[in-house]
Image (cartoon, rainbow, N blue to C red):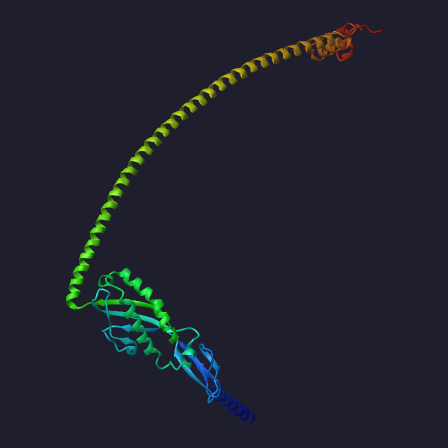
Length: 355
């Protein structure tokens, strides 16, 4: 039971909140401008309200929603059912040279930023579109009447006049709190007879322009041909200069290479000759040093062997190297030394007598 009671209270609170929200808040949809009127106060609130939720108490405040998007005002005899309140017949004007012309045009405009509340405050909300139509018709008739019949078939002149007309439209539409964005002149028609003559005149003009263009093309081709010949001649001259420089560099390089090779060969021969001479000199000096060392060794050896110790050494070497196959000794002679006593044998060979 408690759960049901709580749910019932929550649902009731939700219903009350939804009712209060609906009574106290106002929604401004996308692509709309909200204008709030205080019915019990100062009238229209001095503010434009963007998309979203805003405070608006039912019974006290009244809301107006104006179109934020771009408006299209079209002047054409080809009527359509879409947005028919912003479509009007083609503009009939008299050109500066006295001819009549029927013009199809389209103007895009929108409510000026931050001025929607002013539009409502002045009571223009239900009629501003119609007043825009009459104002634009008046300004276009005045501005386009400054063109001649021939000016209309010049795209550049038509576009310049359309751009020049925008400031006048801006000033004329400012009291209505709308701002023009762009104007497009889509078609121009003249009376049937004059239309034919104008087309013939336009064709003549186009043929003249074509002839002038052909002359420019021929002149450009002549200039291009002359430039091509000049470029070709300059290219040949440059190629000849580069070939000459290349041959000169090639010859200089060959001479430099030959000089380097000659110097290298000369250096090789001179270095080899010097090295060979140094080798012979050093070899001779080395052989001389060896011979001197050998002579000195022999001299020193002979001096060493010429001493008593040397004699003993030689005798000992002789005794050690003595190879006797057989010895017959007289055992009855005590003066004969035994062959096994090397010292006695040395004394015998040296000639030393025992003291």
